[in-house]
Structures are given as C-alpha cells and as structure tokens.
Length: 93
Image 1 (cartoon, helix red, strand yellow):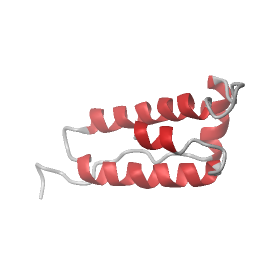
Image 2 (spheres, helix red, strand yellow; image 1 turned 180 degrees about the vertical axis):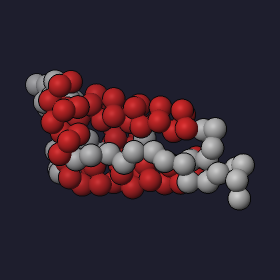
Image 3 (spheres, helix red, strand yellow; image 1 turned 90 degrees about the horizontal axis):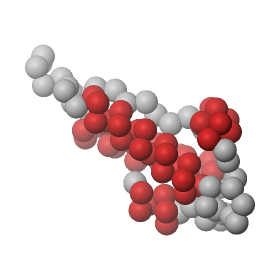
Image 4 (cartoon, one colour; image 1 turned 135 degrees about the vertical axis):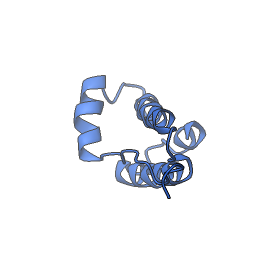
C-alpha cells in the first residue's frame, strides 16, 4: 500500500480516484485476510493506511495540504475508507 500511495500521489490523479482505488485495495485485503482471530491485524492495516495517506498526500506540494484534524475529520468524511469485517469464520461452518 505504501509503495502504491507514494507512486500515485501526484496532482494529476484526483483525490476521488485515489480513494476509490485505495478502497478497492482495502476490500481485497479484507477478503483475503479477514478471517476469525485476525481482526486486530486487519484493523491495524486500516489505521496504517490512513496514516500513509495523510503522510503522502501532504507531500503533494511544497506546503502542507492538511492538518491531522482537517484530514481525519474532513477529507476522510468526504471520502470514507472501508471498515474491516470478518469474511470467513474458521470455527463455524
């Protein structure tokens, strides 16, 4: 995720497209790793993805684009990221 965000953070790709693709990548990650007893790590991946977006989107120009408050309470409300869920239960079939 880090390498993709870093490579595609430029101003030619609109924010809507960046968040759409990141959501698709998160959905695939949740479907592959979203099994019982792995909830903590899947949620941790979402938190790390949010901080990576904050870090790399702030480096799109010479000046900081977002403060932590405007990013987490503004931009992430405009373009919400998918929340993790358990896709496969290993114990109950």
